[in-house]
Amino acid sequence: MNNILVSSSAYLAFNIVNMVNLPRELGIEVLIENANDFVWRHALKELLIDRPSQFSIHGPFLYMNLASPNCEMDQVVENYKWTFDYYNTYGARHVVLHPHGQILEPQKEDAETRKARCLENINTIAELALKENVNLLVENLPYAYTVFGQEDYFDLFKQIPSVGSIIDVGHCLIKGWDIPTVLEILGSKIDAFHINDNYGLNQADVHMKVGDGVFDYKEFIKAYKKFCPDARLVLEYLNVTTEEIVENANMISNLLAE
Amino acid sequence: MDIIVSHLPYLGYSIINMKDLPKQYGIEIFAEYGNNYYWKYHLAELMNGRTGKLSVHGPFCQINLASKECNWNDVLETYKLSYDICNQYNAVHCVCHPHGPMPDYEGFVLEDGQKLALERVVILNEIAKSEGVELLVENMPFPELVFQQDDFVKYFASVEDINFLIDIGHAMLHGWDISKLLSDLGTRIRAYHVHENFGDADSHLKVGEGPLDWNQFFLDYKQNSPNARLVLEYMYGPMDSIIENIALVESYL
Image (tube, rainbow over all chains, first blue to last red; front, side, top):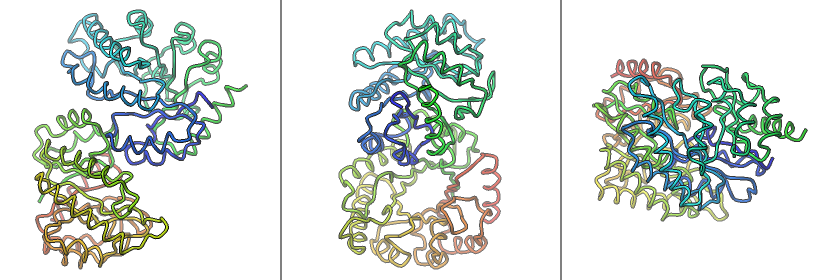
């Protein structure tokens, strides 16, 4: 299960201490903004010791809308410097970046202006990542309005070639993206996936475990093996037990081995 | 008397839902579960226009003040972070867990653990005072307590300027005599964690969902600590049900 990681989404706040019960062959992705230095220092000491599997970081995203004219980029940059320090201290494999936050009244601004601002701000963080030797991955989003539709998302990696892609398959389902096509077009540009399930087009981003919703995971595994077989699979679930996560990881691992 | 709602049902990303709490009620945050940026922007939104007070639950993750294996310098550092948040955002108190689960290392002696916990709480309280923060010592829920009711009162009340937050659910779990506790500590109880359970688990149920005689509690409350803050520390929302429950609590008052 070398390429399977588990997100701390199922272990928020003081539940982080229970994450230590995950088998050591599963990697760990932490939602870094959800705790202070003291908690992370102690939690990571326990989580990463004797864990030969991989470690990755989900970068901060709350109150951080890179598409907004009011985005305080100096504060965002400070927050990402803090995040990148963890990346380098603990030998992480990637940091996930949300390219923007929710945009409730998109009609209030021209889409191209917004996209240009968003790209500029992503580029600022990408340049910082380059300087700090950080593997920064930009994620596709589930919001009702997204700055980067499927084609724009593909184009983002031409505009900013230093960043990679992390595909959230649940977000693809909500936005009606064709998952095998996304994998075929982006190929090895995809360095990781957020794996989770939901009820599909325009439904809620509920982050269920694979098999509980409409996600055609067998079709996904086929495309994964063909187009990006080295990408990490981060199980990003909500409201599940450790036992359920382990069982789900085993199922995915078996499918990969077939 | 202030009514404050704990962010326990809104950990992680769902904290944004706390903005739906009516502005006359306060919010208690678990300060260690967020970095500086997280709190800066969340609190700006959550406390904007709020007349209810902010309070802070101090750190407790991986901390056991009764254990000599607990890294004291780390504890001081993380409490300092919580005190900074208290001052930065005008929090009315900071909650302190005086111990974690009963230490199980070889050679542990209960009395030594009690003395160590007290000594450390006194230092944390001194630092809090010097920084203008009101530290409140809470009673714990663990299966084995370092301080049972008599020892809790004996040790901590013996230090003149230590004040308390009494957690009603934790007191229930260990069959403490709540009326006596309130009578013994009186106005040194500056706040309560309000919730209940059936004695089988620290389930943080809402007032009225368990077996506690809340008429008796509020009678004791009015008699002994009528100005203490009521922090509703519930495990679950949704917000509508919490607001409905606040109305029930207010009816007792």
